Image (cartoon, rainbow, N blue to C red; front, side, top):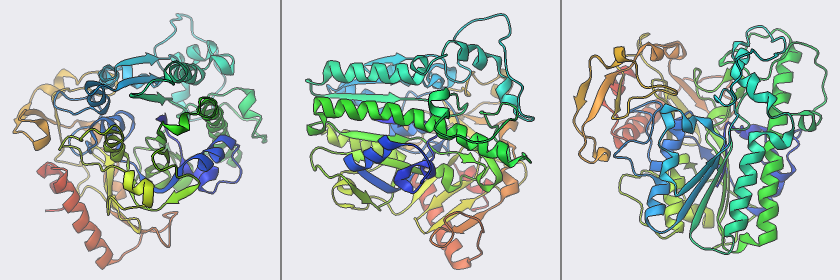
Length: 485
């Protein structure tokens, strides 16, 4: 599995983009099956990885956090059934408190340092930094500019080291059976840090202040060239990813791994790069640029390539797909479905895809309609987190958050364990209420430019939403905060 972070499918030639330099992604479509109807699950980074491990949606019960004691973990199941699992990554969120036990589920793992504000190199003196575009506060993070000094050439970047080590594993173990390799890079996640080698692919006029790290906010830039510049910076990062994807394809060719090795190329989610007048992925509605993701698969058992699939699939389907490939029965708690039939003959495995961010709109699509159900009160309450591992992204819950812990009776997937029930803090009293509830007709308005009012379609999608939320065992207050009871 080659997994990128924040890969926007609308920037890929495989999905119609005609100006991105990504020859290896184009080559990928000639080697694999391309999925046209793949969707996210829980958002963003570590919630998505929990979905990957467990094969079930987690965003209705908890936000960011580690694997829970009761979670079934894909790499651990494989490991316990004689399959060597190896993670190679530069995704530093694995090594913060909110993701601290995902990598230990693998048989072996390697971590390459330096992405974003990974606390890597220690320098007391402030680094030299360029003059930033107004409003680009995230770019002022000093650790990121310390880290960049140590990646002054493309071959020194953490993505290069990650693929180096991934290729080393492939070459070392190419003659062996029963292994699963996950090459996972943080790119093209912001900041869009690349060198002239990739920037030069996108010549354009821009002489303004530095901006390669958009904040998650509405677009307030009045200079159109600044907006275009950010998009070109993202494109350069995507081309960097394309180069390293090509190295995997080259080695698959050289070692003839196509004969007996499955390949999945995927991402956790996309990103808004000024579409809908937004930068980012979490605070705003999860439009198609975020939620509709690219996916490519090769299965040597059927040898199908250069074809496309229209059946709806979702991020949670990867776990049962891989377990089926290794002839292992998936745990009953997994909600995802094996994609073998879809890959072989476009057999549908689901009618809808449910997805969202904890505390945000809860979204469902059937491929034709997109329904985004928002909270009915400005305070976005009631809202609780259900966990035995109370951590946020980089730190445990504050003691103030833990003053009124309740115990929740077990859900079916907690295997008899009662969890903490913790009232969600003000971070979720956000702007979600402002967006309200939205309905889009994707068949006639894929760009989601104009919400529609269609009572019949909305009632149908609302019924589907309630059904899927109940199947996920969504806590009762989730229905209450969304006005569904």
